[in-house]
Length: 322
Image (tube, rainbow, N blue to C red):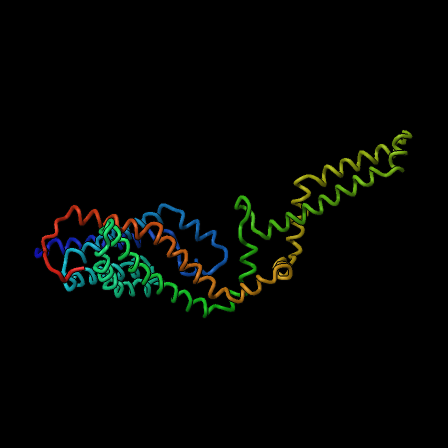
């Protein structure tokens, strides 16, 4: 493509796609600290949104356009078109959309562009669905470079906060919501204890009512015995009710019983996990990053790249292209 206008349009589309992706990502409110916790409920809630889906789509479109630049132009021209556009996008994302915490992974993406183009060139040798697979492979390498940098940045931050992350590990475990998602693990433990107390009270009353002396007094027609039995049955009903369990649960929480210490005593592996929280969190974040990349972004980028290559004619004939 000797005409410079298509190159300008490609650069503009590439830049806009990445900026739009960053805009939708900023709406998710995800930060680096979102990954430094064992309680992933908030993070997963942010990921399972339309904003995050639009982020993935826009990013995939940007990658598809980036691959097309490498496919249509010889490498030197491709770099001249794509790198300034990417740098502008990064500046807009960090300064305009306040994604400064992701600046380092984003700026390293600048150096991933040559890797992306070279990967695209190398994968041209594929025989089955060569364009689609080449696009997916090249975009995967681009994202992998950013993901590896993201892991290192997160690891550095977590190491500087290692003591804090260790101390917060068990409280965060207790704060994890369970069941229908409205109760924390700490609340669930309180309710379990309250349920055990309730059951014990009910069993005690049943045991009293089952005593021979009680049965004999009732059978003899004693008013006091009959009234006492009715009181016991009323107590049994109250002890078995949800109001009593909630009252006991609230009382346990008000006493500020240290369930964290009890958990550590019962499950000592939590202590070990807490000590290595600074490495567990970055690894978990990197795995999640790669999972999303493999599941959606690279494949969608490959499809977009294939569509662009099929629709737009390639008139610049040179061997020095991706």
